[in-house]
Image 1 (tube, rainbow, N blue to C red):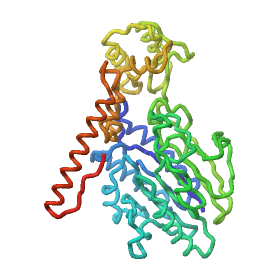
Image 2 (image 1 turned 90 degrees about the horizontal axis):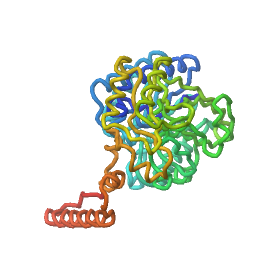
Image 3 (image 1 turned 180 degrees about the vertical axis):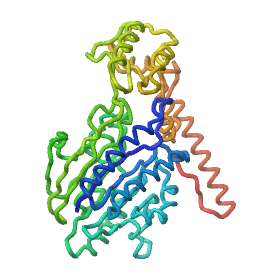
Image 4 (image 1 turned 30 degrees about the vertical axis):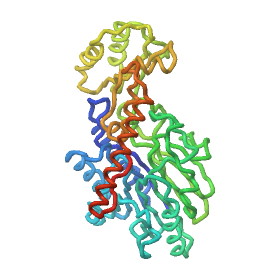
Length: 425
C-alpha cells in the first residue's frame, strides 16, 4: 500500500489579522497535485483541520472543492480520505460526504458514538475504507479517551483482513511523546493521550493536529533528506501544509508512506514543501534593534533585496517604540502589495519571559479565539493587561456561576421531565 499523508491545511487562514493566504495554499496544492501524479498513491490522507475556522466563507469552500476535484481528476483511481479536526465543523464536513463519494473522496466528520457498545454491529463501517491494497480507518477529532470505540473498529478490520493487508488509521489527536515546537501552548498544558489509547492492530497511524513533522520514537527521521524504514506499527505526524505561525521554523513536508504487508515494514519518505512565503526575524544575525529608525532602515534594505515573506522584529527591552510604529511598518511595506507582510508579535530580549509577555502586544488570531471555550483561558493570557487582578478570585467566581447554571438547568429539566443538556465548557 502506498499513501500520501498530509494534515492541518487551515484553508481560509487570515494570519496576523490582516493577510489572506489563498495564494500560499494554491502554491501548496500545485505541489500536492504534482506528487500525486508522480507517485500514483493508492490514497491521499488529510488528517484533520481542513479549514481554519468552523464556518468558512463561500470563497474558501469553493477553493476546497476546486483543489480536491483537481486532485481527483489528476488521479481518478486514487482514494482521497478527509477527516475533521478540532478547527472544523464535524457536521459540515459530514454533510457533503455522499456527494463527494462520486469523486472517490471520503469525508468523515462525525465521530463514532461514545456508547458504541450499545450499538448494533455495523456501526463501524462508515469509519472503514476498504481498498484493494489495504484498509484505512478514518477517525475525525474526538475529545477524551475513546480507546474502546477505537479498538472495536480495529477489531472489525482484523476480522475482515484475512489476506494480511496493511492497515492505516487516521486521527487528529495529541499523543504523549510528541514535540510541540511552534505551537503557542506549553507542553504541560497540552492534553495528550497515551499512544496505547489509539488501540492496536494498525501498521501506520497518520496523525494531524501537531504542525511539526515527526515520527514518534524515531528522532532520526527529522532528516528530511533521508528515507526511513521502521517495523510496524509506526506513529507519525505529517505536519501542517503551511507554516501556520512564525514560530514554526522547521521544514514542512508531506509524507510518502509505503507498507509492504500487515505487521511488516513501513517506509517513510518526506517530500519537502516549498513555501511561497517564508518567515523572517530581523536582525537576521540574532542581535536586537535598539530604535525604531534602526529597525525600519534594516527592513527597507532587506525587503528590497528579497522576494516575499513575513517579517518579525527583535528588539532590546529598553527600546522605546513610538505608538504608531506598526503603522510606520505597514506604510513602508505598502508598495509591495502584500508580498512582504508584517507580524506585529515582537520578540524582546534582555529580560525574563514574564517581562517579555508583559511588553509584547496582545494579538490573537480568529481561530485562536474560537478555540477558547473557557473564559479563564483568555483572562490568563491577558492577565498582564490588568495589574492587581486576583486570578483565584475570578476563577472561583466563574466556578460559582457555572455551578449555579448547572443547578438551574437540572431543576428545569426535572420540571419538564427531560434529561439535563448543559455540559461544562
